[in-house]
Length: 258
Ligand SMILES: C[S@@+](CC[C@H](N)C(=O)[O-])C[C@H]1O[C@@H](n2cnc3c(N)ncnc32)[C@H](O)[C@@H]1O
Image (cartoon, rainbow, N blue to C red; front, side):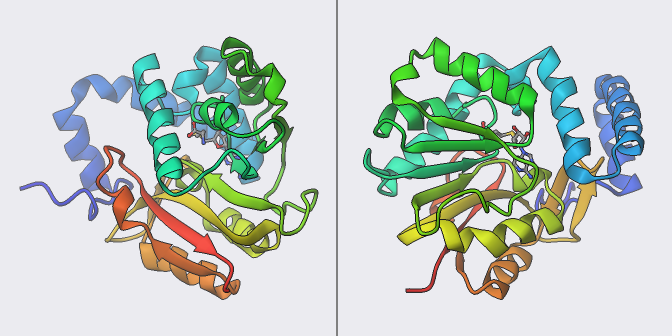
């Protein structure tokens, strides 16, 4: 019997061998990806520089696939899922939103359309995906909404005003981040949250051993991330109602204490 997906250690040799036997057609692409990632890691020891190079390579092939969508239909569905969730949780046009790792605006274009002009701020480490984001803006004719799209190197957020954002959002970003990147974000996000504001982020959850695959995909235990947020004086809770959505990741909500 195969173990629960939440107990799988995708970095283990046993898992890799089992996966290869069950999916022989995926062996060649996996070997290619391993070779590329090894080369990029050697060239860029710093994680952000490495992941930026991964994004450059993926985006040059297909920006929608670069943010994790197998097809345009999936790209639309994943954006809609993020948008619907936040609207159900009270996102209103007058709110100010920061989208960390906004990618090519898979969900961003919907947030931009919903929010008042100038109220959406997207940041990303990848110039290539931000160029694709501008294309998405053009496609959906959202020029008048004047969203801010900014390149970033780290998540200290020091260029942003204090107590400004009602909603901060990071979807499928910490699933690609080592713990020091998440720690940096949690150390600084409290400052920019408006009173009553919240920060939602998704993560790849494991209930077994924490692990990473090719330094592209990181699996954390819920408790690790809750503890990290609390270490920075934030409140944090697991969002049970996200679990029913057809998405492989889990979600945590972080707030400033009242
Ligand atoms: C899987 S994509 C998701 C994009 C978008 N959130 C969405 O759901 O469509 C992850 C994005 O996060 C960006 N990213 C990864 N690490 C980041 C970091 N430390 N700071 C900001 N952006 C980051 C990547 O460049 C990429 O665009």
